[in-house]
Length: 164
Image (cartoon, rainbow, N blue to C red):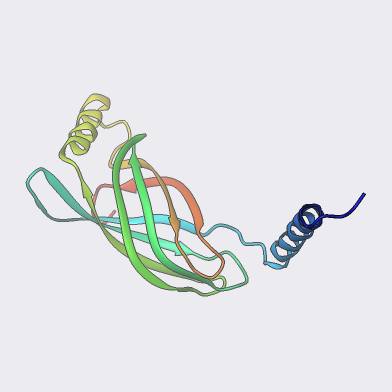
């Protein structure tokens, strides 16, 4: 049976796909394993708002638990207070987290009036059982960099009283 150009191309494709897959997996194996960054909510300060919108300055401590530097280009996150959506923020911050190092990022966020009303109703309904501390969940990602996007999630409590 004669070999046609079409059958040659099909044969080449069958050989190329496994070779390409093997090559890509080999490249991935060369990349160092990285643990996700540790990001904690360390401050929440009131800013002037407009209309029904409230503004806050969220301060995040970002730690690199790896033995290689992490370059980032952008940050996006969502904050939940008491298991309810509270705020989201983005920043075009760019930098490098040194190996086993940390930095603090300050990001302004907007909170809808409805979200704030929900939080206040929840506090009124549950009284002072948690005191001035509210549980939070922080989810987000550090964008870009040479090795791609790094996602993070952290949980903790935020203190509503200043100086405590």
